[in-house]
Amino acid sequence: MIAVTTSERSGWRIFPLVWFNLWLAGAKAVRWGVGRPAALAEVDGLIIGGGDDVGPELYGGVLGISATLDRARDTLERKLATDALAQGVPVLGICRGAQMMNVALGGTLDQNAWQTFGKAEKIKTVLPKRDVEVAPETHLARICGPGPMRVNALHTQAVQDLGRGLRVAARDTHGMIQAVERREDPFALGVQWHPEHLFYAKRQRLLFRALVSAALAYRASQAQVAAVLERA
Image (tube, rainbow, N blue to C red):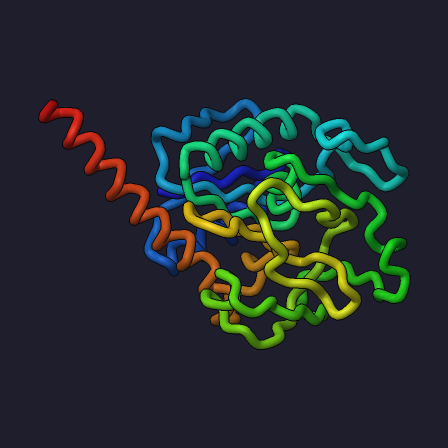
């Protein structure tokens, strides 16, 4: 069972896409959000979904001109991300989710990424029109393959300073960070693009499969711990 956090505004159309990708990977999904039940003990993995910008006060930034915020969602997802990462619950961050994962580990964001990388054409589409270079010897490379990939882009912000224990897993051709991951287990991977829209691409489906595999391992380990405690 994988929990999926969504925006209250757009979750009605995004959650079914994520649900479909998880179903293809052999998992079930439950939608979480502000005002919905959310208990990590009841799930085996977590997807922090896309949507609104992450509030800059969470990482010591200043409110920018492009920010569209949902502070109640910020509070919920930061706690979920912090607790999941601390407890070893597998996490996949999608766009905003990758940013929130980074912030939860003490990292920062660039609120004006398209200005910082001025030579990069601003792309805002669910179609795969952005070229990304996967870093070698990363978990992302092992999951999806090391070759370049073409992805979509709907973001305004991007990861800037890395959070504790994270490394860059992919950048676009202009140098903007497009994926981050935890260096060591447990599984935590964040991608700046929206793989749920790219379910027709095998390499994107592999992201969900990797999360599900990690969730199965986590579930098995929790069952072993419970069995030991019951015998004690």
